[in-house]
Amino acid sequence: MAYDSFKVLRSSAVPLPIENVDTDQIIPARFLKATERKGFGDNLFRDWRYDKNDQAKSDFILNNPTYSGKILVGGKNFGSGSSREHAAWAIYDYGFRCVVSSFFADIFRGNSINVGILPVQVSPEFLHQIFTAMEKDPKAELEISLPEQTITIVSTGASESFEINGYKKNNLLNGFDDIDYLQAMKGEIATFALNR
Image 1: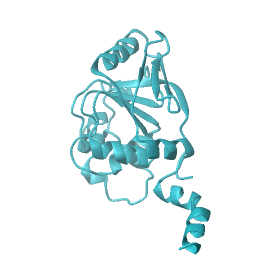
Image 2 (image 1 turned 90 degrees about the horizontal axis):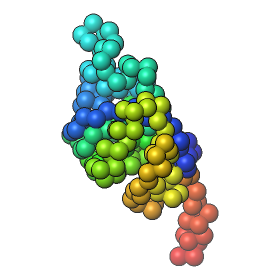
Image 3 (image 1 turned 135 degrees about the vertical axis):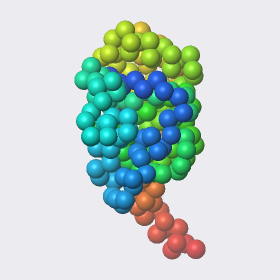
Image 4 (image 1 turned 135 degrees about the horizontal axis):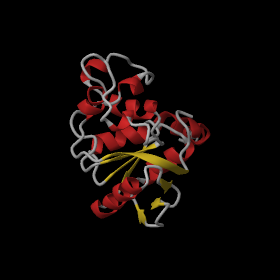
């Protein structure tokens, strides 16, 4: 398996109610030298998290111990900008397994799924409900069910469905990337080749 399988995730979340978060803000270009998916989490939102002297900025949400969890809740148009897959690597390496927004850039969505992050697109109204619940209780939990394709605010019971491509859903459920998917079909491929 390329990454942990994703079925049902119940966790508190980290709110980032900023619109148009682009991939250069998620992981600045100067950190793109590595080719392995390790160590990028240290520089997630680097220029927002740290000042010029590498001191943590107390007013940035990832430096606020009040909020934690495996879910990042972002504003509209999350992951826009360049197509760097390192942005998804940084989010995964930091420990997030799901990003919630009312709109995702297509390339970022694909890159996220390919490394085991579930992008959950909700309506603007439901996103507002999530931010409100988190404002009332920083430990408010969300439950994301990939099999059912639903996201629920546990404290209120409010729920909404989300869309995902069937092939990508199957890969996430099994912890497969595209190569794992093909490896799992080796027998079928060999049989097909023999019968040609």
